[in-house]
Image (cartoon, rainbow, N blue to C red):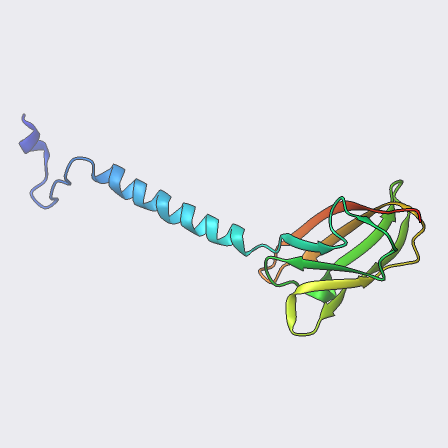
Length: 138
């Protein structure tokens, strides 16, 4: 029996490499879709005060700007001491700026502080992070 005898006349033969081409195209579609959804997450892109910044005077507010929209009702910013004591928290939206959140800062003495944030991105993903800044002594 030859290969021609094993092939059904009702089923045409696929060209060599057809499975590889279809699999490769599927992989490309998945990687593009994955890259698009990863870019949509609301990662922190700017902060005031910023990470590792030394400020001469204690800030009145903490302002965070994200790469995508955030849902203020489900987001939180905290200011903590290095040992984890929460000094203040908030999550006020900035009108007309869906990528920004602010929080009133508590009275801060000279020292290092941690800003922690947990936000719900507009795409439904939760993004968390933290950074330190220092209030310098006068």
